[in-house]
Image (cartoon, rainbow, N blue to C red; front, side):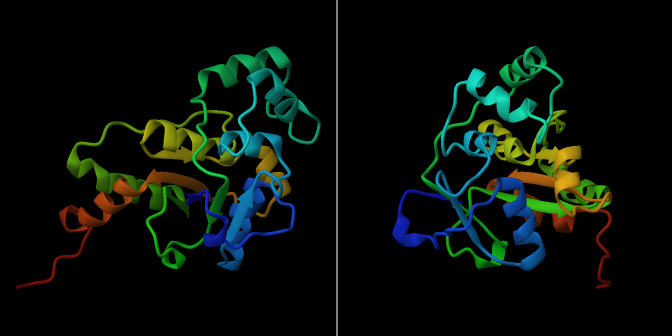
Length: 200
């Protein structure tokens, strides 16, 4: 959830990347707040709108030895120009388990197996959802941008870099969706043929 009000967030002094923050929330069931000062990754700051950078400035962050998403500057530029551009939504991004939010979050993330993601996205089909897209070479933080910019769910397969740096299971992926779609999925549970019907 994004906010501009520092009094409403638990500010964190520890430096962290967006992908590590999401992984920490998953593992420890905690709430973390990220801002421009404590986010160590320029790409992460850009993609979640804390510090929007010119694409040319962003390229070194995605072609460096540490986080080499693209082989060259030219390839990075071609890919980044096709991706949705972030918008500033606040000075603070709070990540945490859904049940810990008193206000409605901007979007909902699931760490899921492919089968679980299929079931969740399938529940949206009862209201005429369009086909969902996967954007290749997409970092976890850019999935937040893509979902917010398009207003539609997105699947992230978790990049090789993020899997190497973190402790993600090979069977996990991330499904991001706007809150409205999460609510629609819940409302559609009774319409699913996979739901066991209670005899009347």
